[in-house]
Image (cartoon, rainbow, N blue to C red; front, side, top):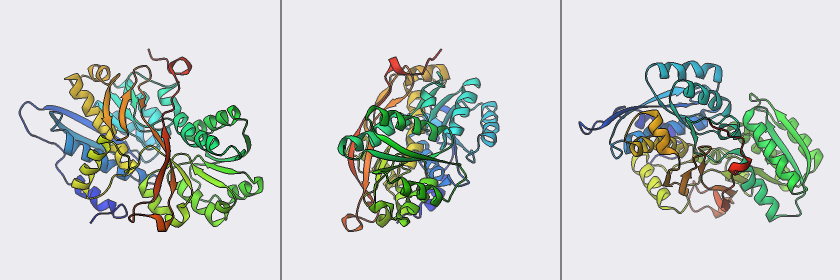
Length: 397
């Protein structure tokens, strides 16, 4: 049986499936492209997302009446290396794109795809992609950093009014800066004392120096604003430092089940995690999705898998709704689209192309409380937090 820990074998099985799905003469040919970090430290999120995107094309294209193929690009987590690959795909006639793992790749992707006349279903979190840098050709499925902060930090402030002193650890790039900006805003709104912040570089793997500063500041809560392997290392080292016994810890943007397994239940116990998705969500769309992953990959889906899956799915759904592969018609069809998604009813609002969906606050379970080996977390709360149109920086032309 394939588990999350042996996930790469499942990915290989999907990769060996035919790239082009043929079923009827009337099928509409379409080329999709997903750009993901398949090498480097953020491959732990990119590789599962690739499996999700491949599964969406393999399992759903026929239902949408499409003769679909998928081009996969390794963006290497590096915009300078990724953009020539995106431009080459556009020059080859590809018009429908999804990805990336990192916001510093997704933002220039949005610009290049707009310039090339394509459509981009983004999977990144920085506010700018549906804010100041929004574009008519760009859509986003994940909740932005604004929503993630409100449904994690905001929820914990409401649940524990005595936790007045907060410390943040932040990666020094566009995603982290957006997370910190939103955290500082919510601290100010609630008269919370922000007792310190430590910025770190994207290449950092050692966080003990920052955690020493956390310990010295003696906050009530440590908010971790980084992502992927960096947040995994931060949590592990914070636990080794004994900080879990001295303060609450919240990871505002979790990477999902692969990350939980890597951290382990003992370290994860009682740590709060913000999540775009959890496989235990009780919705018709998620039940169908879980069945699909179990049937094809013999695994329950993780957030990274679902992120890759749903962004490819929405592109195909938009093409079907438009009855056309013309990007302008697909954009029009996606604007205002409501559908049954993994988190329940989801809606793409027209003015900024943000998908309106729930964001979840989870808590790590004790090892003794797990129902099965992959049962790492429980849902504490969830809700929807989005910048309204009157306050948005998005000004589409």
